[in-house]
Image: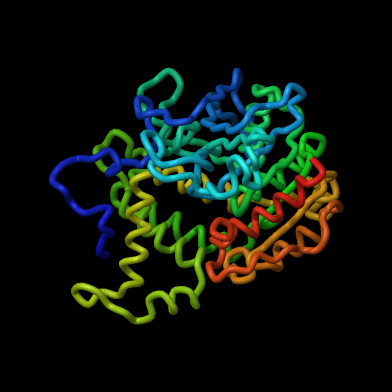
Length: 381
């Protein structure tokens, strides 16, 4: 298999050849950190001895902490929702058009908090993090996480910030999984809820696509059971292949056909292949393969009804006014899943439809439509 441009030999070792994770000593950028004062008990058993979450904030917290908004990112996102690229932040804010003065999440009014998910690789505790009391990364010893574990860590962050109740919790895709977990596990702390392109439970097809990506990473000869940190070379080829697979599911057949068709470039290579290589190259320079596996497995474990009497009983716990929206062209998280959420959440009305040619990624690209949904939920303050 031909590797992406991201994994060509350059004649020297570069940090991303092992992992694109943020490392201690790298520029912190706008990150702040929360460290738990005790181990985190995990849903599947055992515990994570050390929990540290990187997060960013915008705006000022009101004296009564009534204006806090929690924004939860998708699989390969991070805490940098808003702002320019720069030292510590290899890419601009991934929802930049939604956050800031005068925007839907107006930072002159709202205090916006965005954590890097537990298990991630941009400052939060994950497989690339150094184990407590030692110089080695967790690597393959990092425990299995579920969205409930990640929300439990985020609840600790909220406590540390003095936020007893979020005015709004918003998330799309994997972030939406955590958002609905917030509303079910902590109904009194979730003032309003916006769920975008997500589901009450991962479907068999979503698990299958995710499994293919995990297999691509684990098949890389540099995977070493997840213990590749410190070896000088990580499974970046496998991570690149996982990204290619994922990106096809994030977009639509019609869009790929319209943009690329059968057009070829230099050497007769199809332009659509070059496009996928471009996205693979970008990811391996800012992400960690171990985190990709851990987070993908946590998404596969998502089932808000588990040990709660099923989906209907679990979602009946939600007390927040809610909007559920899906993308009309999304083939990865189809509208049927959002209709299920809207039907079972007591405070939701009919599912809202985001019109987009971009498939699943429409919840990220159609900022004006998402902004209108945010404004509707926050209209009454």
